[in-house]
Image (cartoon, rainbow, N blue to C red; front, side):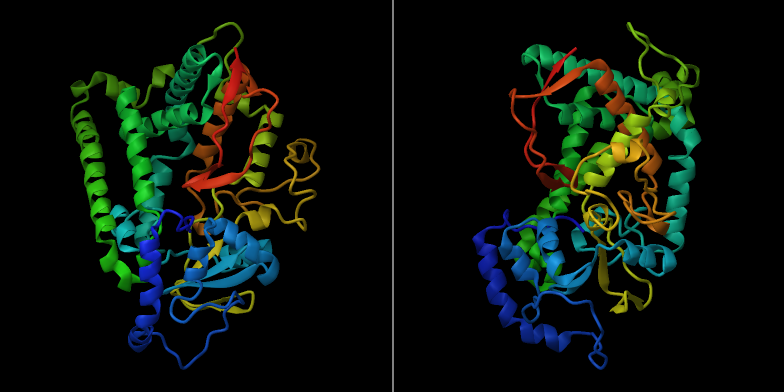
Length: 456
């Protein structure tokens, strides 16, 4: 579930929404295909309005969706229902319930709900590994991704790519620090490094800095396009969002025009390696896998990271206290099921609220405290895959666990190790505190951009 806030919507749409919600209520009930003969036993939840349910309450709150959910948990518990127009959301934030859904009943809860029309366009009608419904298509896509893109062997082949990206990141930070008297924007440079790696893994061709930044900006625009709109929850309002739909199609066209040349280039390289000798060797770089560039002290290598117990404890605590997103990707059942004694119909969105697990005082001592020592000193432990118990699942769990888990942890570990090795860091301006309040931009980020001061 993406963050939902209507702060970006004009009052014009609020007025339309309020008026039409009541005018069309009879029509929606009249044409509803739901079977009213059996009343399902849904989890409790805040009372809503006819037809629109809680949608208007969420929209008018002016709060990010994750904050709205967080404030409902003390009153309604670890599983509750939100009725968002034509969609029913089941919010789950309890470790035992998550284990019941994703492990004990893993196959039943392994599908994805229906998508809005805009997302359907960008997912090629649910033909992507994260959007596909549970079945043969998803199994084929995931098998292909894991075996041909994200296996341990394949990741090792891109080791030199990661090394080059880390070096570029360090060079960019040094250059920015020289220009700005030591003040740098870490997130921007880290994001650039990640895109260098991912684009190399995806296309196997070299791209200049301008191209990488252009694709990065394009991806940000796509995420803006995919932000939930009111007509996603009340499709009858779609005529009032024609401009947004046109914008979405324009962005999709731009995406295709940007990416297709690299796909075509890669095809030509595979047919004839002489077409681009640099790209062909850059795809594998076998002779450079063990190459190390030492400047002064030994540069941190991927093999070293496995031995850095405290670094690994810090990263694990980061994933616990600040998971990449508040909700795992939405689940749906392939047949009517129950969870915690409540009915879960096939058209319901099952949302796993991750902080409800990683901040649970029943599972953690002082969960509000950022404390890597809980892992480093062995006071507490957790399996981030959820296999041996559900205490933190930043990448989801069960059949639909993120296939890029290993890749992500390798990248974060290497990036953090290099940043700590190369620089001494302090907050800027001096004697101020880092603002750890959060916002959601596809993944969770600090709501305030904190500038950092570094000393080589």
